[in-house]
Image (cartoon, rainbow, N blue to C red; front, top):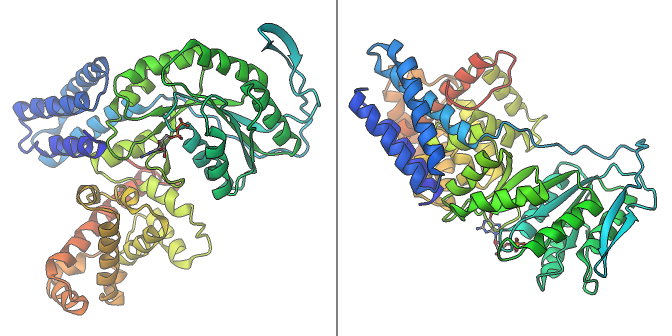
Length: 480
Ligand code: GDP
């Protein structure tokens, strides 16, 4: 089952509760648990989640009386919180900072290196260069998507103004250096590697030293993977780690590996003590649940997920965003962050929309502005899943159709009057003849105009609840 299926099943389970009877709620819990199990989530975690949901329903739902709307909201919140708990390690991933020119921190730590089978003590960074570059070491099995993710992460930081270098310390896989080199050239990222040197520890150290001398902010080191966990791989990892003393070690894990994720994560944790995880291949056929369980077991945060082979198919992982998307309840925080990455500080329309959102307002014009921004952001299917109610629709169609649908919505709003665009949409309810007029003007059936209005209402509710929850103006995702 792919993640989209899991989302559809979770949403289906929630919406199947109509009367709120005990029988219906029990069935909903059963459906949620079997959807998670079929996505490879560890059985112990599912049992714990089921018990927690039952307990919370008992305590929280008893006060709702017969108000079905309230009951449904509370149910959604309970499920949302529990699912967030499942993917949230409650650990913050470390954040690199730009190289401080005035840094006086120097290096010179002693490490043990194996040369010709003998343990030799050597001083790392013997050139006494400033050591404030942020070094990230990547570990993981071969084929997990390590090399691809190294470049994705380098591009992610480069876009944010960091000076990033890539080091290929994978001497095991033939062609590994060529692959990293090609990726790096395409993305215009400086790289380091060797076709001749066989000692990965030496290459890693030389590459890190070179980029440190050149005052790179972030140095990303790709290490060898193997087909399975094996001692030689772990020894090599330990030696590289001792030599380059990374600021952070990231484990790359294939999101589709299922239950094997747990033992893999444990084994790597013992040797490499990684501080965060990148889950790859969360597009396509990834069940994802096995890897998600590994997070809970190793208590390590997932920081990014890979959603395709392209360098931009890379998303920051936030438990609330991820679960909001799965449950199809939209994610205002995620949307705002995506829009912010477009650097729209000087865009008047965008400023007005942000002001409106702060005041808990969200006009049809705001909606139209946001849709225009989405078209600039891509990939659209990711963005659509942050909009409440759209994920169901978008899981059924592809990127092109998603784009056409958004363009059509913008086009429909072009046929609205100023008064209508500046409104909260209620005037269409009072005067349905307006719907007919917009339908004629845009050449679209009335049902499509109603869909735009419905979509706007859902976004508007999200904006209002975000403003209510955060009076200081920093909206957050999730139901509330
Ligand atoms: P490595 O051996 O761990 O360095 O793995 P690679 O980076 O060479 O990736 C192995 C394969 O997985 C390549 O064909 C990549 O294009 C592909 N790949 C990596 N990340 C993703 C992802 O997030 N989604 C998909 N669909 N493919 C990916």
